[in-house]
Image (cartoon, rainbow, N blue to C red; front, side, top):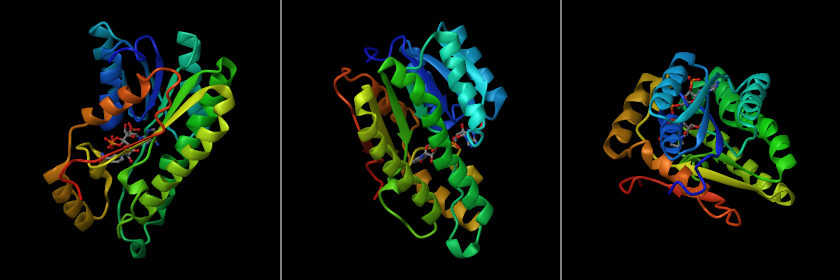
Length: 247
Ligand code: NDP
């Protein structure tokens, strides 16, 4: 499985926990050079140190994806230190679920800023490098909630539908530059995602539901590795997976 992964320079946003952290470990252990972005500097520093001590290649760059300058710096650091950018995994996200009528307007803003605009900033930073080399892969993280909408998840779903729409347009537009695009839509995976739900009743219900069915974060990492490890003339555009027990 390390074919198509080994020696690739991979920028990962949201690498400090959950899916991003699992992907970083999985890819680094298969020979990728991982460039870890997240706000919690101590977490990504510790992960980079751990991976480096095992003989893997990893660097950490403190990054808030709501700040386009910081996202640009993340990508530019990868290019400066390792000579190129092969893959960007636009993974950072949050899911403070709540019914619309509770008017958690600040949380709506944060979801739009991180889940959607953060992905746009990742694309903006990566595209010029990939166009120049006529090579690269942009992997965006949507969700099962980018395919269906449940009450209480409306704004989150809207951001994840937006990521899929963006990814489909991107796919068509970057064809001339030989850039591959993948959107991955996970179902329930056990991570810290639910810790940031501010409405206690919603958090309790969601935790109960997820605890019964969630799969481990490495499931996502294997999907990323699958998309990356296809031959260069194969573009895996979309992966949708869910726990077998998830409706
Ligand atoms: P976690 O909460 O474990 O991880 C979220 C990551 O996003 C953290 O590394 C966090 O880092 C980062 N992040 C949040 N805000 C910012 C920001 N402003 N700038 C940079 N990084 C940020 O959740 P998951 O791993 O589960 O989530 C990863 C992605 O997967 C999200 O896009 C989520 O929507 C999606 N997803 C998750 C599913 C699940 O069941 N777990 C299902 C479907 C999709 P830090 O706080 O250090 O900045």
